[in-house]
Amino acid sequence: MSPSPPKTSHPLLRRLRNHWPWLTLTPQGNPHPRRDFTPLKEKRFVVLDVETTGLDIRTDQLLSIGAIAICQGEITLGDHFTIHIRQLKQVANESTLLHGLTPSLLQTGENPATALKAFLAYTGQAHLLAFHAPFDRAMLKRGIKHALGSPWKTHFWDVADVASALYPEQATRLQSLDAWLEHFGVEVAERHNAFADAMATAELMLILLKKCDSQAIETVAQLDEKIRICHRLRQMGR
Image 1 (cartoon, rainbow, N blue to C red):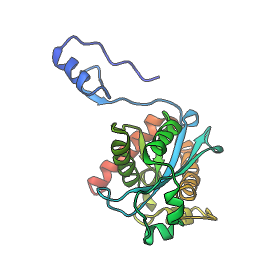
Image 2: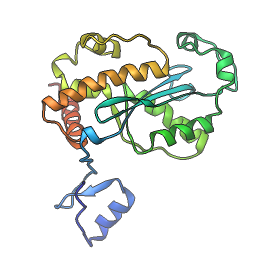
Image 3: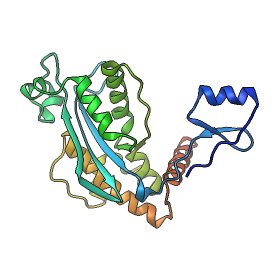
Image 4: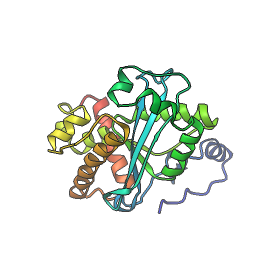
């Protein structure tokens, strides 16, 4: 259980907490992000991938979302999600062809609001994971804002960052999901659709969770701190 923030009557600290409810206060009154001390083995993780019309987070559109859950340290095959999003205009380019998304499939998909409501219901309070997550997160955040008119805040880890934090000696050499999978000898039968890519990422995350065991990293907060330290060291050029 996360420690309760200390009580304070100072009006400045009360305003700080009201303005940024995601902050807690240290005993000295300094703000820090609320930490999640849930054991990794008890956390529901949702590994996801999105397919889009391109790589511009300002103008390109979501085409499909694929996701699968990790619970109790295992991929839960019965706990998965996949959906195609209806496109008002016909879309046919390199991206759709690569991912096997035909114009007829996209024209018969769910409308964006229905699709994204279903996605939010599926993920719930899970901790989300994706490889090179900033792109997936930005596309989902913009799509949810546009379709549902609401902001989206969630816990999100980039599996690339998790891998780099746990295997720093490999981080500069291994940049892509395929490179990490090859390094660990993971054979993937299918790639380049949202669900298959989410499944491949989940396979990698299982390996990383086992590495956490060997390093005595037991909680979400501990792994989060490991990622933060690795990120700071990279920024310092170490």
